[in-house]
Length: 121
Length: 109
Image (cartoon, rainbow over all chains, first blue to last red; front, top):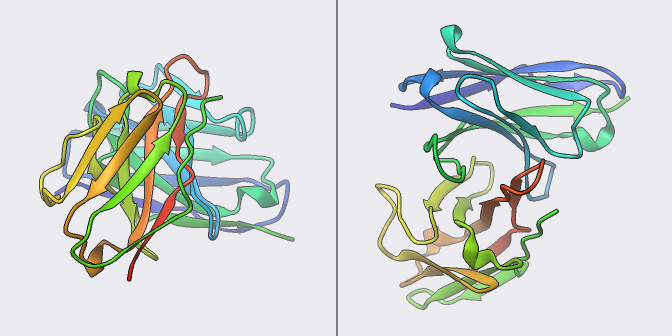
């Protein structure tokens, strides 16, 4: 069965860095586009970043552009999010999610359980 | 950037029908997807491409999309449907194309 397991969250000071990982299993990871989506405490969902199956196409939300970097290692079935210059407003649960359709407009059919990132001094 | 607007809350009695709207400029020209999120859990896809249901999602969940409004309809509402619901589109004309709606809390009375 499809599984997405995030890790790497934790407490970090403002201005600090953190690298999130998402381990995928149960499907051919290299065939699928992937995204990171976050949810601040008590708030709604916010799409963060998107990467194509090969890694050649990448998008970012304005709120993280220039600070966050999405990447993937298809040999390791893993998705990553490098987060630099973290701010208090980046505090959220971060989910990785799979886009089931390589063509067409993306949506997300499987989500991980999320990893909490807290940015605080 | 593209904005999706949802009502903050919808209340419905068991057995009745809940309708959750998602407003956006000419949203009828886009594919709309809907997610259900219960407290402490990850979101679950309940409708994709306006009106298709993933396997395992009850037929009670249906969707439509036209003009400036997309709608998720939950028929014969059950207590277990109480959750937050989010619409989502992909704005291909934008450099930051992923967009979620503001979310709607469905309360079963």
